Length: 171
Image 1 (cartoon, one colour):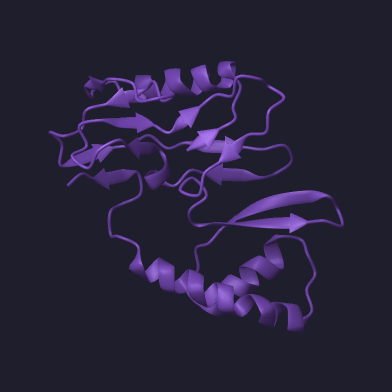
Image 2: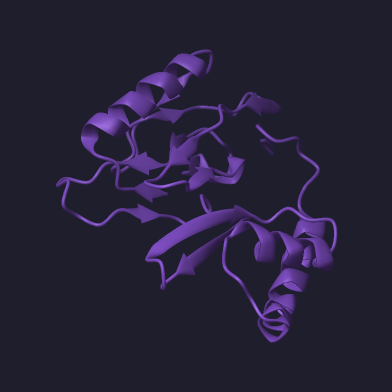
């Protein structure tokens, strides 16, 4: 779940989402989640993309599995997984499903962070992507340190369902 946008940002996101998702029946709210739907009668659902833009150049394409919170396994109540904070000064939270298939890069020297999508054909190309695109110069020893993480990422990528991006199967 994403907790953190101001009420105004959440309402704007919700309004656009509801406009694109208007063909699906609504369901009761669940706890702090107020945009819920009954998808139990659907074999396939077209889910709108959600992309977050952060100060600087960081962008996060929310993984399709992080757009909804499934209240029950029958999909009769699924809710948009975004809630606003009660106070703008509170620290926001981006859940692990929303960060799925991304690696957070922290550059403590330049006091910045970035998000990299973890899409690669091989460990070598993944290391090259990390080494090249995050702007951090690494020695070969440092590159060797990230090889296990890249191998783990590749193993996970091979297990990913064949459901096309933007679609979700309900079972």
